[in-house]
Image 1 (cartoon, rainbow, N blue to C red):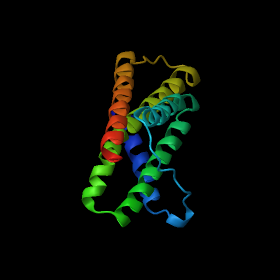
Image 2 (image 1 turned 120 degrees about the vertical axis):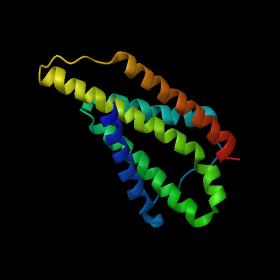
Image 3 (image 1 turned 135 degrees about the horizontal axis):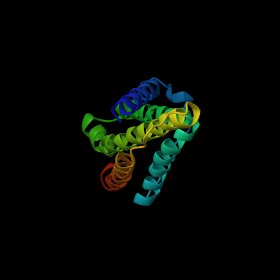
Image 4 (image 1 turned 90 degrees about the horizontal axis):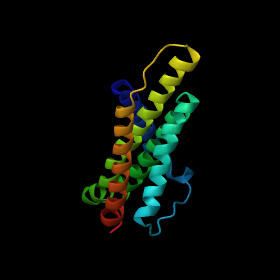
Length: 158
């Protein structure tokens, strides 16, 4: 999984850096109303499962979704840094730093599926799918998203 995690980190970082450079005038208005833990968890779980299912597109959707998530966070960080103190920044974005791990890990899982499909179906190679590792990483991603959602509602939004 290491090479897939490295690729996912690079993709997320590129998205983050691009998002940090977006002109605030270009951005749409964001709904900052109140959200429940389930609202946030559902949104982030959807992103995790899109990344994993993106492996069926040979990883293209996984990479695009991960870059998009990085871009959104990069933009949000740039805005918050312009208008708040570093203490507020840390308080509001700590849960996001946790969910980044889940997004990156799920992208790596999508890339792993893509490689498996590429080798097995397209190249007719006998490749073993590491079920235990895959399931462990999937479970870890889901747990991280749930914990991050709880922290976002109970720390970031207070």
